[in-house]
Image 1 (cartoon, rainbow, N blue to C red):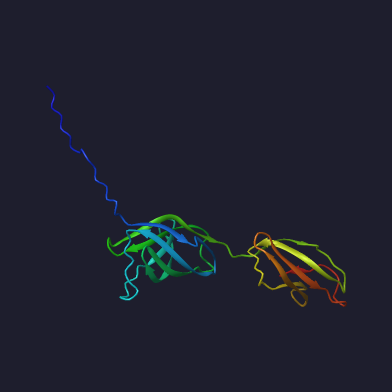
Image 2: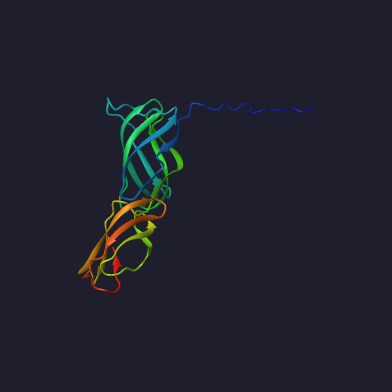
Length: 193
């Protein structure tokens, strides 16, 4: 006969492994500070009362590009905190890492958070001309344009200028502004700033 030996007949899987499952919101802009909530299962986040709240961080490129959040509180399966994204932070997807107090390990959720560019890019101004003394509405389209941004049209490196006042904002394409071109405004091409 044949003898057979089974060395591994059963693998036991630990279903209590800590996991980070989500972060909300899951994106932010360069220069933005936002409050986040992180959810997980079987995570021990510590306690805000004992000063042992778990740190959390965002890493890119195997940890060579990293920034940290500031934990503020915990409740059940959630860790809450604030994130300040510097203006110089690289854009793109980041892994979220949360420190688990029980295991003493950083628990990772891949590609959990995206940093967007905050650089304003203007694509078009329509209409792109007006007469002295004219009051008109102008659409300014581009990316990362904010309703609160100020807009001005300038000539000769900012010496000769007039302003646009935003009154309608659409986060997908830009703003609509009112412009009152002074009657004595110099004619010619203007830069939009």
